[in-house]
Image (cartoon, rainbow, N blue to C red; front, side):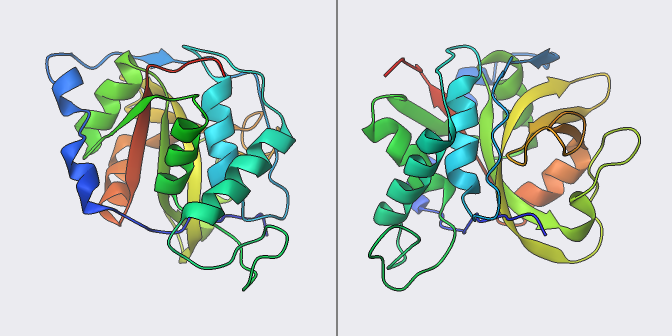
Length: 220
């Protein structure tokens, strides 16, 4: 089965950094931010690093990324997340996965993202992706979401298989859906992408989901 790897770690201090005040006067609009990178995390639980790398590769500021960069973000995230050990050399104990918060902090520490804010709720995410840029989301991943339907939608079905970090790089008002940009190569979904309905995303956000929107992106 394809690897996941997002671990839940919400810091209550994040509530002091909502995206809402930047988008509350906006109206929903459809927009998809270009991302030309289609990285594949393979068997590693490195989705946090790959979702962060895909965010860097996407407009509005496009950075050249590769597997090495994605893995280094992942391993550095493990070094600062709350859990001892990781998958990096010499880590004890050895384990896979990290948190979206740790990934966002690595992007900031490396100078790619001076600031980031959190979308607390569906409307915040709709407006942020439509007007500001892609979002890195951490959500439960259900068994039924490993495959997409003929309409290229993922749907909540079956049991929770684990946690996954993934890039949301587009929103469609007509479809009432988000565009997901996954880290499983171009063989998954429609060339590495899929849709998820607003209603399913809202449910996932309520299930310990999280969504971070980098601001003032920069080349580094």
